[in-house]
Length: 233
Ligand code: SAM
Image (tube, rainbow, N blue to C red):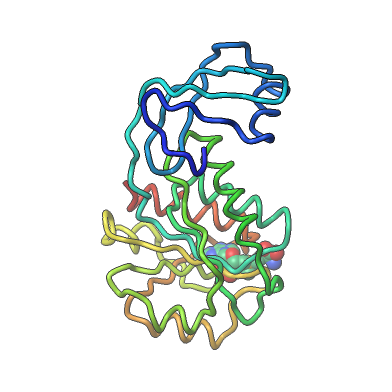
């Protein structure tokens, strides 16, 4: 519920879209319970009221959960087009990424990205799975500049279909509990120059996700699930 502050006894006016959704799509009855979050104040229970046909008020009652911190797992990816990008964003949020960073690479086929759409998608995915801390979606950066300004205390897990097929579990185990980022490339993969650049950085670990070349959106889910299972919280 942005940008309103949530606190006991606050009375919030729903936006026209929210009012339509609650009254006409969800068909809530007067006094029905609604769960609210705004990414800052945790989760609150409120009651639904309709003082006029096109107006909906939410009367905030009690806090159910405090605001958790954002997960300390960054997800970096070369943007895909349209529905595949939406899917990737949703899955990254569901898998517990706390920051989504689009990265421009040499073979990237979607040179622009709509960050507002990405952020809205992330918020929707967070709502779906009860995540109160909506991940930050940040502006696209070029791979070389990103690596130049990288904070080396965060290990970058570079998913590369050409990486030696060592056990990724073994490679990831030493990083359990440490700040991590996962990088997935574009539909056309990384160039040899980019591979050389990445593997030359001391904070980069290249992993294989198996002998098959996965679609980028599938690789995202596989990599984040693996990292969460081996090194996540
Ligand atoms: N052309 C397909 C597509 O349209 O999505 C496949 C693209 S694949 C080259 C995209 C990215 O997924 C790669 O750059 C890499 O980051 C990741 N990836 C795919 N398969 C992988 C594997 N077996 N191991 C590690 N990473 C993989």
